[in-house]
Length: 384
Image (cartoon, rainbow, N blue to C red; front, side, top):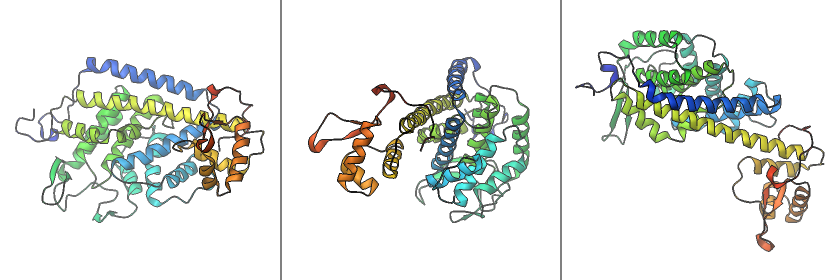
């Protein structure tokens, strides 16, 4: 317990974290095994599919890391920014906003330059990317520098004005130079399992809370950097932020519990490791979707596919809810129902759509899967 202290950074032994290595050995081993299997699948992909996977994971990471903080980015803008920075041709995407571009710049720098030392100057560059102007909403922030606490102590607060609840209060600004110097030295010199290091680093950084805003996003980028160093990969194979966003309330609960507890962070690390496992499962599902999309376009590679059909198939493959009907097709493709029926019949004949059992006015169609039968021709056309 804190013995009269409210937060772990007030303890005499801060930041000498401890944890039960024996209790965490099995969860770490399971995550490592799952990660190895996933990387094995990725290594078996061709260049185009590997690029598609890297693009999808990076986009997911940028969107979800921002969503955790309640910030909603435009998906196509994020995809445009990632594609440009990875050198991937994706036609028809809009110019990314400065907001989207800044998040992508930071996250890709953390992973693609994981071998570059993490320094205060590099963190300042990340912060400046997130905040191209010295404002976060209506609040002024110190950009590219540690917070000054000029308007009062840095607190994490929720609730309406007058009934606020203080979840956490960070160390005073006067401590930041020493606190961050100690953290950065540890990050560059400590030798430990990268899964554990990512968990310790994230908790430690967000507890110091060195910036006026953006600490969560930067803290998750630091975790990504630690994980990238562990598998020596320039591109993340899974999105940790996506798994954290899926358990957003739990994330904040576990952070608060750890920051108000003692320096034994076994519980926090167990939760963090579970989120890495969930992230790898999510990446497996994402990869399945990419492979399925490639299989569909392989089947269509030698067909004269109309632009209407291409548009609708891409919509179906990108998370379209429910089954396709001729009326839905007509609405998506902006064509008549007669034209929609002709297009659908072609797609059924080509083996990429399957008619569901119900007929008449209830006639609907679903996208074919490989287990539905049939074989794909050689890959000559990339995913649409």
